Length: 96
Image (cartoon, rainbow, N blue to C red):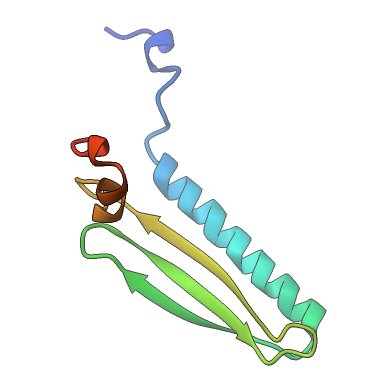
């Protein structure tokens, strides 16, 4: 039987989903605020999925009254291995 101390340092069951929801909400607030400040520019959105796990949402504002161009992006990447870009830079990370 486990005690409360045994689980005190573990993340809550839905911590990944809660963190994702929080950050996507921040992205919404930032984009809305920038559109309000600019007065003319509007963000376009493109969502993507990563076959190995994860995905993201990219937003770009162009041709605004104040901002010529800007981006507010979110990405969530997970999988069974580290990306090859990391392994190429740090071969000792393979297997972690």
